Length: 137
Image (cartoon, rainbow, N blue to C red; front, side, top):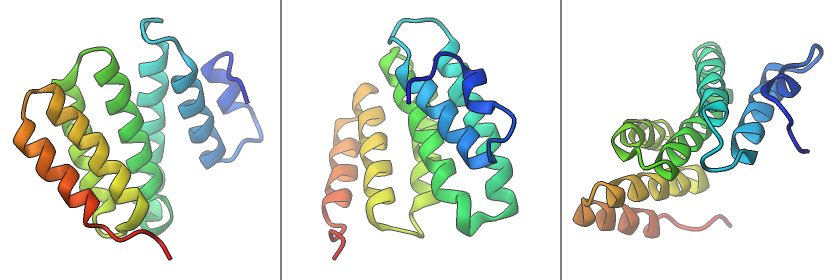
């Protein structure tokens, strides 16, 4: 679904998760240099998912990690790797216990942040860790 504004994501009747998903969709649909709307939307998604993850960590921690990855990716696309790195690191920390695909995606995001900061050996080690995670059955 195309999002025309962040308000599209937060209409009355939307569940909290639907609203967060909508905010992420809006953020990812914005042009790379289209202003701060994408980052603002992603930031709101992070804040909302933090609240959900505090209430029900087993149900919403992966969602929070995805919001952090989206924010980090947007920041990387704007040349702001220093700001993206802590978000990518937090996403890895959150997904480490669940493992699997969420951890692989988080590690990939972290590797991109490390590469952008010219920390190539750390990025390579991060990607090697992701490669060691077995695929789902």
